Length: 186
Image 1 (tube, rainbow, N blue to C red):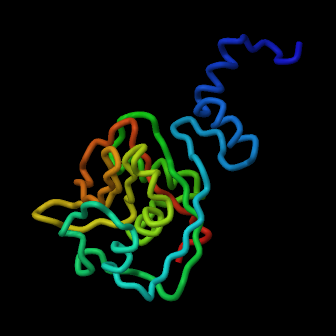
Image 2: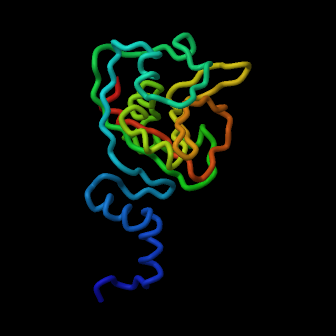
């Protein structure tokens, strides 16, 4: 027998665990690995120019709305020169806390939560992604009005927003977490 003792239902469960046929194809191309708790989708190369100010990075994203509490004082840039980085989106497909999402991402020793610089470069280069689902960067946080906030990209219809959301938030099943390879981190 070609599939040993696996039933058609078990094979279908494996395909579903990988995120459908797109996930299977991504796995076969070596773009993601099997993992019990989440799927990593896509490879998104970006270029981060640390010669730009935070305001310039935000302006490059052409957002319809941005939270005014996203300032250089709260989110200082940490890098020099131009950095090429490959980012990916991690989807847990379940309600998850920020702490659990960070732990699960880093447990693979391949990924770490993206920073605000990563998020802004991603938003500028891939503007359509945030219209599909919220995208969160857990690698940057700031105290705002008495609570810890993290930057995120969101959208509604054709509108695109740059937001701050409480770190202690329970993230919905549709959220994606922007991640970067530890190897390419600065």
